[in-house]
Length: 458
Ligand SMILES: *Cc1c(COP(=O)(O)O)cnc(C)c1O
Image 1 (cartoon, rainbow, N blue to C red):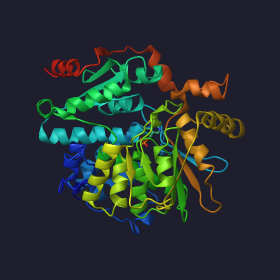
Image 2 (image 1 turned 135 degrees about the vertical axis):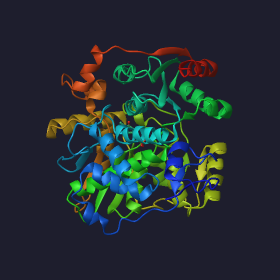
Image 3 (image 1 turned 90 degrees about the vertical axis):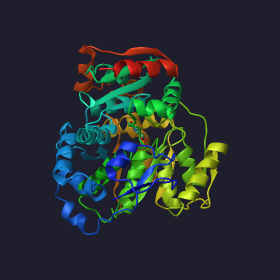
Image 4 (image 1 turned 120 degrees about the horizontal axis):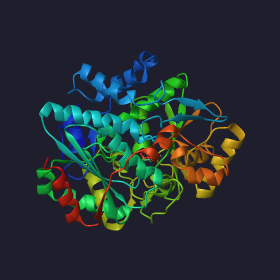
């Protein structure tokens, strides 16, 4: 399988090259040249373990890693999960939830970042090279990326977060990882400052080259691919129904794009239910056909506080007849005007998706009612998904909502929904006894560059 850019300026990359490139050099996103169909494999795959299933699916997209090596790195990636099924499906009254939070940082990003860490390591080992990962986080991505690469000889990771503005749990999940290759940068500034600095450092091509900078953000193809796997697992855990639908709490459109891809591969996903919080650019798009930037609102589901969804461009590519020139023009229009008017600009143009948003009040209500009536505790992100999914339930088609984080990561919202009810997880309780390390830096590009240079001299 070869990879190309959504904007038409890059083509013919191997899987390994696509993983190492991250963002395509022409500013687009990397996608496979074609989407493999699963055909009758669905029957054969029904009895596989999660790592076996992941290897089968990955091997359809990756022909430059020998199968035994692929099997090995996939097995190692999911050995760190604390459930036999890796991503178990649980039945609630009206719908199912798929728990994607059994990895080391208790959020679904572990599913992709545990694999990406092993992939990077494998590729660097093979070429005898070293890379420095630079990332910016408002919380969840940073800890999952660190957990994916801690202790690796060929990788140093630098994660910038806004000092004092992540939740205490999120900060501890990063700063208690004191492996020598992990560099937590507590920046005196906002998350936007962190992201701005990251973009500026990456745009200095000489610096990027000299320090072999790499990225782990959600545009990396391997992250999408790792997420395709659990939609297949959901189908098998539901007993291979004739059709099912998935509800996905959405921010950057990475998770739900993986569902879209699984559907294109032939998984009988009848409909995708896209759930947003007050940051509803995507819900508005699927309701009206207009993609228009708004202001970022801070909500109880912070990992979804995103206005411009970086993975949306992949979906655009398929909607614009796989025409790179059209995607390029559309993205240019969006950058210039903050608005996209698409040729398929009519409500309901794509019946694959339905979408709606949930307020903070809906989120809290959903956590409360589901717990009181069914004894199951949702995290705020999953609650957004369940709230929206409940508007789109179907009689004969089961619905599975992706549970993207463990509620113990967000004790304040749980406390508000269920006063006096405590929520805990041993992995989080253990954090308060561990030593921490972070480097405080001012919010300027030069300090960050100097810091990277000083730490990689070894
Ligand atoms: C990242 C994240 C999301 C959003 O996922 P996208 O792939 O960006 O749409 C939802 N919930 C949680 C808990 C997350 O960490």
